Length: 127
Image (cartoon, rainbow, N blue to C red):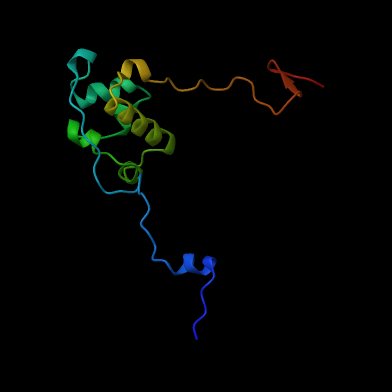
């Protein structure tokens, strides 16, 4: 005599379905065409246009090499986390059709006032 299985148990017995893999796929991202009308025709010009010293931090030989960069490859090359994220963000914005001269963000300026609260205000120590 067999007993029916409860509905909760049946979910555990189903084979696992593959989930969508968005960021962890091995498929390369498309390489966008060069857009000379925006002033970008080489990989050096692109890195110079996004700013933050990206041209000195990333060493690539070609346009295809620039858009083939991955976060893991830049990490192995010694690029810092903030710089890696900014460069990958700029590459994706360019893939979507943006102009680097419009979307480039300058770095935040250094803080002039250091302190944790009302003990330091306007650069002066409050007693």
